[in-house]
Amino acid sequence: MDREQVQYIIKLLREGHSLTKITKLAKINIMYVSVIRKLMVMDLLQIEA
Image (cartoon, rainbow, N blue to C red; front, side, top):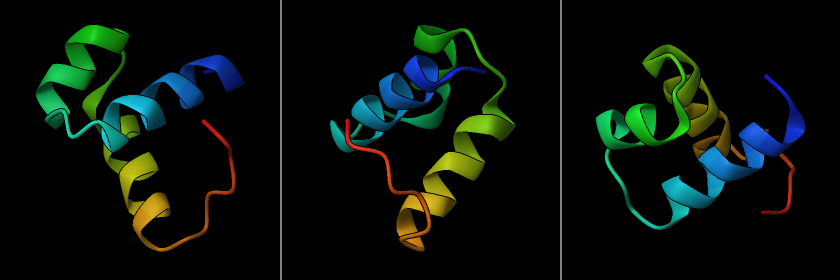
């Protein structure tokens, strides 16, 4: 997974899309999306998107 994919997932999360929809749009495993969301909630992910 590269930086652009992470930024795209963060953008979709901020827009309020569901995990399953993000998984389909980004063509990525739902576990990765879940981990990125948890890091965002815990303020451990510092990437501007």
